[in-house]
Length: 266
Image (cartoon, rainbow, N blue to C red):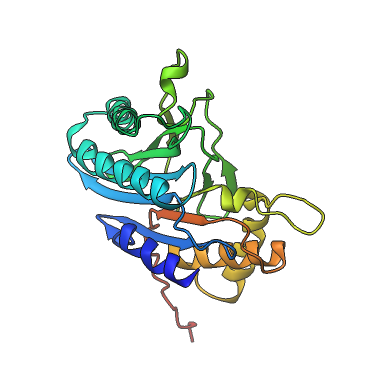
């Protein structure tokens, strides 16, 4: 597992902690019983069109998954700069995976597909635009710690499977006011189960954790939010990491309000 974690870090370096006014944190937790590199991925990039990001999960393990991850990351890094909007970016990612699948001739058609969230922040960070390709929906935390699950307006297949039918890929837009945090993660989080088989629900559990954290100190940073989430998933599962977990937090800071102390009048 340790070797897999080191290899994963080489393939998947952490993004910068800050791009413009956006604060960023990412974590990757490998499954306990996996010696092979998994297919979970994240990437964040500043582009001429704003900050763009992707969180994804490639089907499979080992070299096949690593190959697909490298294709996803390479295609994203190029197309994120070139594509004028998210639909064009997603089309470029789709084409890259389909071409890679063709080069791996003889492989099953559904091998190597990638569930993914493709995210774009509007200029000024006032809104976030999301395309969801068969991935667990992200959670939006507001400045008070209230959580909202951002379900896609329309179901779409994973990247690499669009050729199996006729689909449209809507772009969903949400307000992203100061103090907001977008949490994206793979199904290693959403499918984590307790001893009775109950799935982990970040949107239910996180607000309680954040309220407690705010009562005992300053509001948590994006990295601290991810650490709270990872530790809580561990409590939920009894400490067992059942599947790889990739997590990404994207935060727009709220303006700091300076406290002015006033002396009592004599």
